[in-house]
Image 1 (cartoon, rainbow, N blue to C red):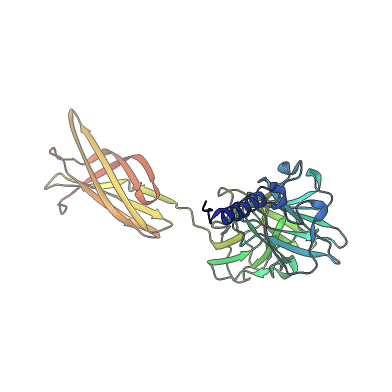
Image 2: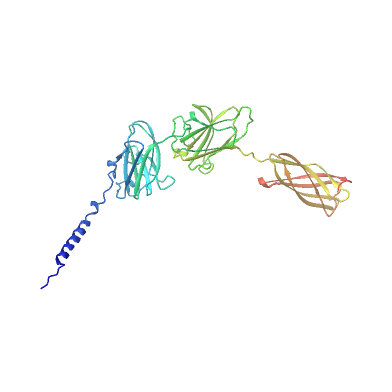
Amino acid sequence: MRRNPTGRLGWLAASVVATLIASTMVAPSAWAAPPSNDDVSGAKPVTQIPFTDTTDVTDATAEPGEDSLCGYGGHSVWYSYTPTENQKIVADTFGSDYDTNLGVFDGPPAQDTLFVCNRDWHSSQSRLSFDAEEGTTYYFMVTGNGGVLEFHVELGVPPKNDSLSNAKNIPTKLPFVHREQTTEASLELSDPNCSGRARSVWFEYQRPKKWSSKKIEMNTFGSNYDTTLSVYRGKPGNLEQIRCDDNTGGIRSKVKFVPEPGTKYYVMVAASKNSAGGDLVLKVKNAPIPFRYSFSVNPNGSVSEATGAATVSGSLTCNQATKASLDITMRQKVGESVTSSRDSKSIRCKDGTTSWSMTTYSSRAYRSGAAGLWLTVRIPSHDRKRAIKKIVHLSSCGQCI
């Protein structure tokens, strides 16, 4: 009988396949090895600064209670750092390919040792900074849904105007716009308080003695964090607060004041309620002058002998040049005869006093004598409206039209 030539080969192939299948049917724990710094007990030490560590945290796990500390994603890793001197530390997860949460603890991780926490820093990655004290061990916790983590630690550099002694000068010629990053700004124990004093930066302004007093406005509109804005006079160590504002413009701030020529003023911008800093925009300008106006009607007018038209006049005073609309209603009763008319006119009110006159016609002629006049003045550009009632004495005019 003829043997099957493939019998032995078939048996060998089956054996190989069985071995391969068996090798893949091992417990998941055999290949799902979490990172070495998966638990706080195995926190990876930050040995030098700057520090960078790239780790795949896909298989990282979470310890009980971590979900209540600083965000949660089920995959956490830990780092530790003990500074040998007081330092400003900046840590971030920029470059990671997943949404991270970053927390720092100044003791065994717990709610009461959570020092700083950041979930999203203008993106899905995290960034934070803090003042680290010599000899204190800080624990960094990074959590999220898992992926490739890039963790960085470096020294923070505070802004040049971080302290009152290095206040940035605001030029006397306005407007002035200044932009800076305040994330690494620090807090001095001598800093005054205005709804918080964290991440404070300082400015100074002095109006020349020969200049007149003029109101100026300062605001932080355009900044991307919650600011406070305060103004002081006096000497460092003995400052008198003259303005303090938090959230006039949403989470931004605005103050107005009249600086006395020759007096130096100090301006502090801080993070509200000791929150994080960010991108600061400080604007200083001469404050808008409130619009004011007044007007009058001359008590004497004229009436044309030829046409019976009445002419009245007066003045309009404005502190800013603008357009004005004048509306008049005139009424005169002589015996049983009543004459009335309405007219309007637009004029340009200059910065100062402008004279005006209006001639009004009626189907029934006006006569010499008293007439009632109602004048309404409108300033459309400033949404103003005001009216008065006057008695005008009309005199006959042979030369008037």
